Image (cartoon, rainbow, N blue to C red; front, side, top):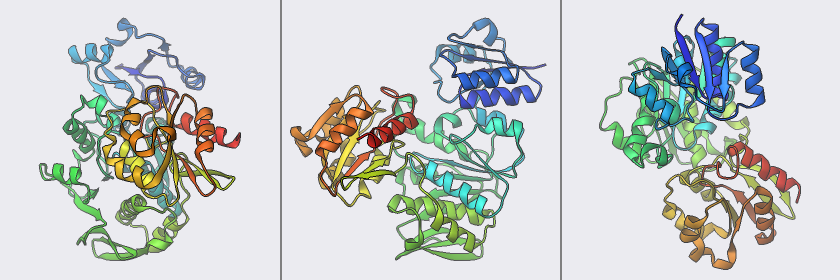
Length: 446
């Protein structure tokens, strides 16, 4: 019996452990931190041995293969020891893909991937298809492969999840865009990050589809260096394409094989330039799985915004509070600011990932009246924006409650308070969802 060791005891790791158990492996899970109670309960339910608070070498280094959770960096000491002795290290995505025969639509990118993934999942549901949602969103892909059956999966896949993918193959691969993000994990080397994203295309075959943003210079630059064996389906807001999607006046034109259809912007449930791109990608994926035009248009018109992504919370004294906690990089915050039409009190900050804030300068000048910093170290934000908004209009806070109260003092009737942090959440919060939930609770308590 082969031995599988799983490193990491959260959603991804526990799902991989359950799948290994179902497939008859000798499985052991190790987490250097504390395992949340509900995950520990799942491991006990499935009779999977585990440890927390340590990595025991004698229980790990004897593995035939290791499934590494995406949050664990390659530089971690135990990972380095495994690599030095030649133990194969896989991602949960790679491991689960071995046992899954469903059609897979896989989405990665720096921005828009959660919205695009959710749109495609909704489209397939509305078309009556038997579809699962997983990857970096919802339930673990591996856990679903172990316990359920779907004909299709829509998977949001982060660069971290792609780092240890080798044979996994999507039927439809989508890269929404690529902008500097997570560079601290990639030696502050943009090329390493780009190559990680493009791992989603490495096993595509001629009958598969690759959907990509042809307006994104970084994507196109890398495409010019490689060969992809798949149907190429670009989407663009600048010009026309023979196959793919493009913007023509106030409508999206979608061309796939011999079919051509139109979707008017006024029909889209999601506003903003960035959501035109997301809707284009989703429409192309839907066409590639043969969903009819009426279902595509109806789904894009009725889709509801996802939690923590430009999510309206409440309007208090004619000030609208918006939760965009999932905006963990500069480009996501750019889109959030760009689509605002009212004066903005901007809540920003967290664990910096090597951000270059200069790309936001013009938008901050145009849109932002005051800044509330929400983080342990806000020095880069002060350096970038204090001269723009004025020292009297920027302040530091260390909790969601304090940030919301400070923002409410800056705000006037007709303004927007926008939590769009630009940064990871791990300095003050457990995850971006925790940050968003605390923000919403603070708003409701005003």
